Image 1 (cartoon, rainbow, N blue to C red):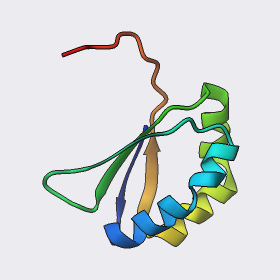
Image 2 (tube, rainbow, N blue to C red; image 1 turned 90 degrees about the horizontal axis):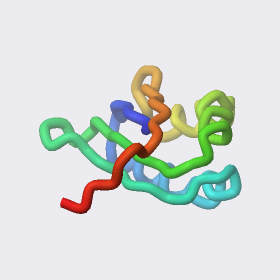
Image 3 (spheres, one colour; image 1 turned 45 degrees about the horizontal axis):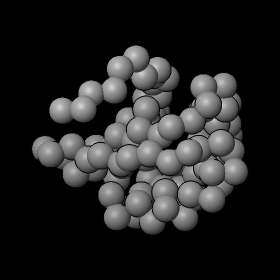
Length: 89
């Protein structure tokens, strides 16, 4: 899970979408993007990823540069989560 605040959501989304092939090549299996209901520039991304490849990506200079280009404000918050239960409702 990645949480960060961006300067402009529309700008961030363009850069994020353009980087999809790169994330896939580095092991991403897709995910979901959320925005805060109270602040449209607060973004949370849940990405399904092999744990070690996710850690590697989060530490990469490439990822940091891409986030800077996209207008991410401050350091992103990375959390590495494991599914322990799938809820049906």
